[in-house]
Length: 444
Image 1 (spheres, rainbow, N blue to C red):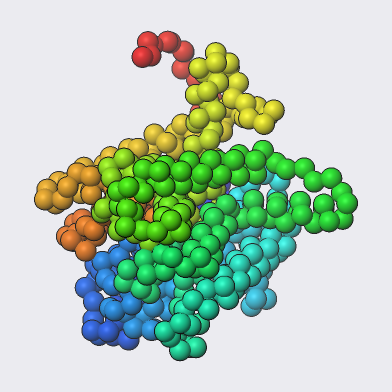
Image 2 (cartoon, rainbow, N blue to C red; image 1 turned 135 degrees about the horizontal axis):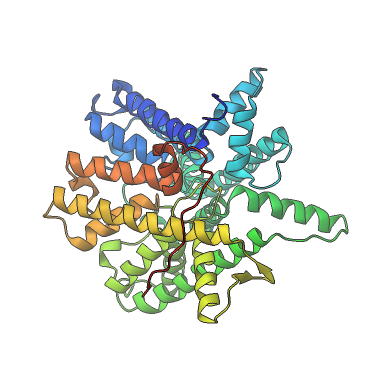
């Protein structure tokens, strides 16, 4: 009976909630803050932002938190990026304990949908990808941070920003994020690469690894439809956003920049709204059209089974392909000479509808709680929280306790996913052995 009532959605949601409250408790301890104390709501907000890999802050991370507090935030980012259940399972394996079938199925369904793979091999691949890429990123960032800092400080800055970038968290140990490194080619390209790789998702990274191994061995390497859609959607979103920002903002917010800075800043701002949260320019100076584009990018977010949030690239792609098929009077939804299942289309439509509802309710609640906030600024904040991005138009420190709680809930729903949150709150329905009679209604 217990097995029949087992709900993975509730386990995932509960694990994130547990990590958030545990992190808030640690950040509330005197050793975590430079002042020796912090408001409980601010501690909860910071913990939720770190676990949900968002990056919205009500306290200045480098000034208000000690090295120990920053280490707690970094641990929460890593924990939230990979998933609490993944880490707990690794600890059980390391301790020689047996892992339950439930936990195995839960983690496999999170990172590798479809045919179950070898569990230990999959877990090793996830952690290998993560730590190798983060180590390479830290090594690439180290020369830039050595300028003006000692070795120990530079190493800490490199590790922190590498983990934060790969986990798409957006937390920075610089008060201006990465604006002071706007013209540094090494910093920009390293952070951009880490953000993109973290946002592709572990199934895509693993498939790319297997394809590379097959080709090196002289074997044919076939790619899945999931891989093709993720890469195509990611490439289109980055390229389109980059071209728009470069052409539209060069004579506006970036008019004082040189050609190199404009190029790097445009590329960086095209990538970071995909749930990362770093910035190299003042977002309050952007034109309304660019702000709207960034909100769209935050809404889409990263890809499934990644460290990012949003409705995911595959959801947006499936919705686009479905609408394209309907406009062409086709009953099927096709991509790369394959037809998508009706379930995939239904899930995409449901997810988008839920996401829009969550954003609207959070936006309305924020404006009701704080009428003085601008509509654009409040909507941008909600989009950023739902997409677990961390970008802001400057209103985060002005949030009241109620406003902070609304953003915390929005970050949580954005990280676990609206569908998962809905399943976690719903009760398992008994199997119905009947269907009601069908009747049509007018649409449109």
